[in-house]
Amino acid sequence: RAFIKKQLSSVLHISLTTDVWKSPNNEFFICLTCHFLTSSYVNESFILSFRRFDDKHTGQKFRSFIDNELRKMNLKLKVSSITTDGGSDIKSATLGTTFGMRLSCAAHNLNLVVKNALWLFNKTKSKK
Image (cartoon, rainbow, N blue to C red; front, side, top):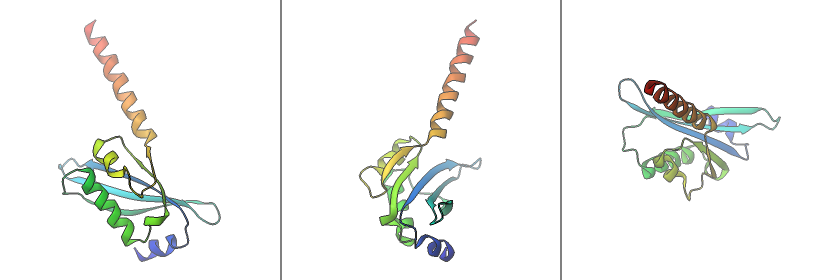
């Protein structure tokens, strides 16, 4: 953590990504990653936190988690945006916060489109 904190001390702006998922053992995990450009304009990313998430999945719990991680790393004033999936819990966690502009994850949205298209295709095919 000290290495990452030192690397980020001179960075002016960061973007965040976060996601929550369930393991095959029904355990929930959360990951918070920061992304930034170095002074040489090289794109870098660091995982700020990756842990099991036993709390209720509410916007307030997610907001507290992100706030705490940013505070530990002295990054709260450097955040320009946060990219998340479209879950109502994480969307509410990022509304009206200092996490910058919330962006919807393009890969997640594309996955939803493909899943829906396949479901419609299979539904139509099974009716024949």
